[in-house]
Image 1 (cartoon, rainbow, N blue to C red):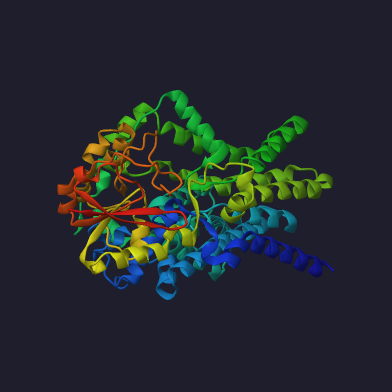
Image 2: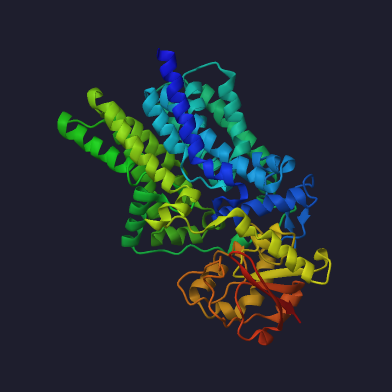
Length: 562
């Protein structure tokens, strides 16, 4: 009977998991996906390299279709599961399978961690596993966040002196599925703290030290090209050398800390704990404290770590800290805020600890209600369900841009544009206005613009000449390009307090006054402009309107650089 009950619970978890991913399973390219740091960059980077003849090229090979040519290692990691998927599958299928894999690994890891190390029963473990698996992970990070429960499960097993080869395989394989500079550094730091704690407690640490060495060595091997560039080698001076940090008042620092506590990082690491998990955890904590007149130590420590991370991130915006960071190239260029990658896992650990504080007679019923409410929140954040149902009820800010895959890349329209231009596509370059350069790149156009977190500073300076007049119109845009600059794109004045990179045909006005430098465009061998905006006086920028094309969401005016 118990075996049948366990099988029934497993089937329910699997059914809910499949239901969550049903839109992407049924509709394929017609399904909705989040474009931010995904469709607008990541997908195209791997497509250009793996399908453009650079799949087996050395790391420092120049990828000529992208921004006039950048080293391969600045776009992709060769030792990465997504790279391998792109070698054997079409672009969309590789992306689709990666999305499912990320969620499945999160589900499996949280289930194992909850059952073995968090003391959860099967129902509670299933709830936590589903909740964590339905976090809106960015595919760019692969398993950097989604794989943390599985990695922690293996690390804790090793810490208990278990002799199981699977634990070591998980540790050794993790660097191939995660981002070293964005997550690996912080994971190594966290493991180092655990080693120091065990050393202080006089516990054996040799196996944990070995695990740390394995992670460090494999991470280093997967990023040897990046390390070589940092150390000098045959690399280049990065555009990140001009990045600057800006301070905020102490009150704003406090608001930032509170935002991270309440929401997580709304760009890359949203934890979906705000509406259900956070109030449940805090109310349970307070109830236990009042009733028992003592602190629930495990939960108190977890909440303390969460609070310290949030306060730390807020403090990084404080003027003395910002001034210190701006004096160091490394501290200025590197995103020290990324301890936020642990917040999803920590909130789920805190929820597990809170569940254990609930009196046993009430636990099953309460967990059922909390589970149901949390799953509603998770389904609301699934792009397909959000766009189809929930967007009519509530506006979710963390989703910057949601599009159907086929609408976003508009392959039929760009094929028409390519056919209209009376030249071979490898004989000219284009730039985009109001359209992410990733879209023309995806469709086989060679571009002078692009989105890259690491490219030559000299190229940034050459590109800036194109938009120098536009940057003087808007201080926000000027700071966006001059002091960040990872989006090396045509930034123009939109009359707002931020720059919208995705100007679909429903957003653009009748005309827009945009001034570009034709000399600078020609210097970067740009022959055509693909513009979502109708330029009011193109002649002053040395442009000639040639034709107009439309798709479901884009309107593209083709201009020729004279």
